Length: 119
Image 1 (cartoon, rainbow, N blue to C red):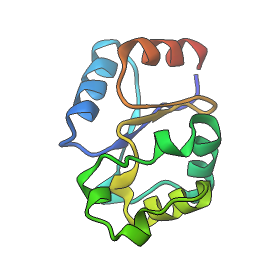
Image 2 (tube, helix red, strand yellow):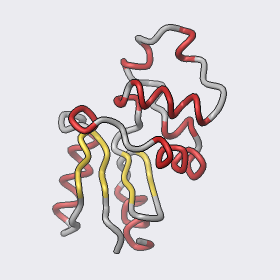
Image 3 (cartoon, rainbow, N blue to C red):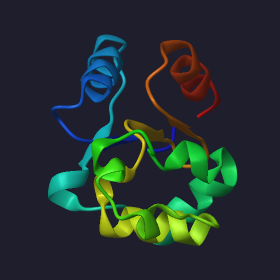
Image 4 (cartoon, one colour):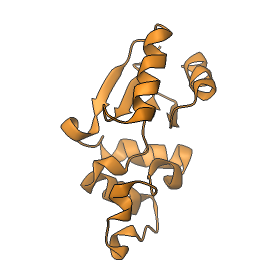
């Protein structure tokens, strides 16, 4: 299996649920703390936008997004979305869970089971 990476922040409820689920089901993973380690590489996030769509990768419902100037909220393409996440890492949908070839955004045990069965 490819390395499983969970991108998130420790105090996020969905991230905590995902980490607890992974541990309870015996899965090894790396946790990438967006606050401490910053955002992933832009090229990686562009790939996620291609697979999931930028509206899934970018968390428009976050307080961080709502606090942005209207001009910063205007996202016209994947590159705009990624550039905004690079500037504000907490705009990444959490948790974002990646194996080498597959990725899901948000915690859903059924989708996570499917992801891990294909990894």
